[in-house]
Image (tube, rainbow over all chains, first blue to last red; front, side):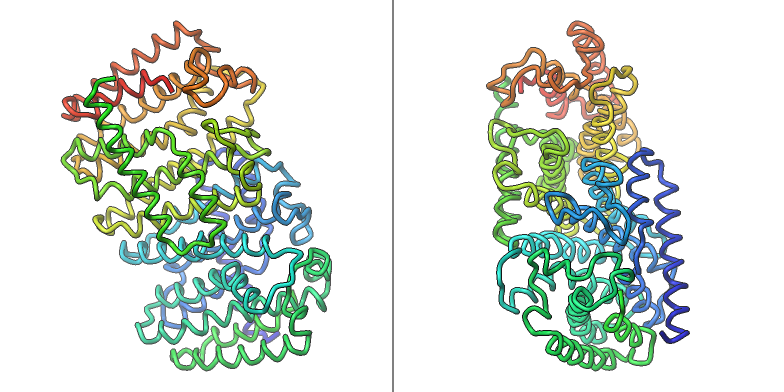
Length: 294
Length: 294
């Protein structure tokens, strides 16, 4: 990995980790609930969504401290969705990133409530952000609730569950991922640019980048599930096949998936240039999201 | 029941029911998800929280149409909390108001996601409210997330689960109900008054009414569980005892509970008079909440 990229990722991971840790720790939350919330927040991961949001904000000249609360809110929503997805009634996973899932570490009731609490706290976090105007807060919460709720992520999760064990056409698979993964990734890019001060025409160009980025992200996820390294992934390779999940390699083959991904990467880069941010870390991040090994 | 009160309740129930039905039905939500969300929304109940909010708004001269979206948002949060509370990992209830609970009617995964979707949609509803300013929206969402999340209802629910089967002192019981039930009832009163245009000093007087109302509500709930009518309640009498829940009658006896409740009712009425709304439907509603038979 490019040294400046790896420094950028580490620096921004630290920023988001510190913000999340401080924000939650400093709230007078019931101890057992806070422990469970922090357990999953600390389980960490790559913080791709918040880093993407921060990079988009910085690409348009915005300040880190203004975007951080919204990036943290998005990561809380991502984290709550993982806690609920792992529950026995959903994907029934015992491990997440090599550690016991929340309901295995604590219990199911605590995990459900920790998820509910993180979801609710995400909106509070944006409301309490000091560098944002009321107009910005309303815009950001409106878009976040649409992206993550019944019109976005939650619907994608239910469609995903309903399609398990069924052969579905590529169109449906793309719809599921668009809702389940794409909407939050798109939100990361669009809201970062919005906070950074992108104008209407730039935001318009970014919509395509944002949509493509979600698909690129998912294709790579599916490819890694077939050909990745279990130790790096923190989960067994081939779990999609075991769980009867429809995947890009399953429908298009590995070669076809790689070709499609590269096509999308090039289109995403083109629209990034149209938004006049072709020469920023955001550009580099697209390749990183596309080629990541975990 | 007083005829004007019963007319008021019916009229306002219809308003909130129509708003919820229209708002959710008109959203292009995945059909299976929408069905599950509407199932629990339609299961209805008394709509006490939204009616209280509307009455508080009207007491200060506010308009029904301005408060309705926020009242609907609060009812969505109340409904989501019931769906999640009923889950096997939580209270494990098969029936709610005489009908199968959401996870019994559908399945656990759908119930978890319908709850998540209603919680998220509640914030979207406020953001989309046409009659409110951005300042008001930010204030209302901030307070709602605090009242319903890790600092409020969700914490109360976890404390309640943790106290099951244990004898707990009255102080802890009051803390649980303050968080689990009181915070949303308090939010109903305070946000209604805020939208209606109450001034700072009036809001200050209402804080006490709001806190007391939550306790009054819970004492009556506990009394009904001991001495109520199962048909009217829609659940068996004595379920708190069966579930090993600490209750007011269990700690203070029925007589003691009634005395405490009346003391609180009188104090709540006094602070309502201090807020200069002693002569409104809000005043009548306190007696109604205190004496309701289901």
